[in-house]
Length: 261
Image (tube, rainbow, N blue to C red; front, side):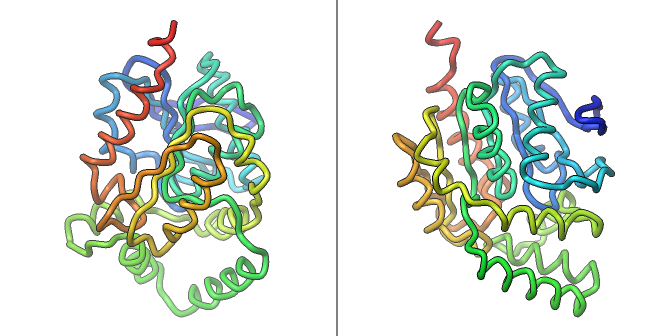
C-alpha cells in the first residue's frame, strides 16, 4: 500500500505493472483490493488503484462528494506525474470517472463505465434514501452486508459471496454521504460531449443499476461501444472475471496511445 497527500488528505492506493496508466475506481462501499482479479492486466498496464475518501484505508469523512472524489484522483495522478490515463470506474466509480472527464477531459485517454449511471431523478433518489434509512434500522451490519451480496451477485454460490464480502466494507461514517452524492448527479448534458474512446459495460441481471441505464448511456455517448454480460449481476469483474478482463484488455489495446505514436 502506498500513500500520498492530496487536497490536504492522505490518499491510499496500489500501483503495479508497467505500460500506459490504467486507473481503476471502486464502487460504493468497496475497497481498492476488490480489483485483485484485474491485477493480471499489470502485464501491459501501469495500474493505479486508489481508495476513495471514506473508503478502505481512507478515514477522511469530510467533503464526501463525487466532485471531490474526482479531484482527489486527479491529484493522485499529479503526485505520480501522470499526465493522462485510461479511466475505468465501477458503479459509483463510474460516476467519478464521468466527473474526472468533466473536470479534466485531457487527462482521460479512454473511459470505461461499468454497471454505472449518469442521472438519478430527484423523486426517485429521495424515495430510495428513505427506504435505505428505514431498512438500516431493521438489519444488523452483518445482515445488511449479506443482503448486499445477494443483491449485487446473480450467482449466490458461497465462494463468490465470500469473495464479495471480503472486499465490500462500507463504513457508517461515509456510506450514507457517498450514496447521497451518487444520487445527486446529473450528467445528461455531459455524455454527448465525451470525445475519447468509451466503453460501456452493462449486465443482464443487474438489480442495482438496471441494464437499460447503460443502454441509454451508450446511446448518449458518440461512437461509444456497448458490451452486455449475460448471466451476471452488478459485479461482472467478480462473477465473470475472465471475460471482463478480456473485454477490458481488448478495448484498451485497441486504443493504446503508443501504437499511434
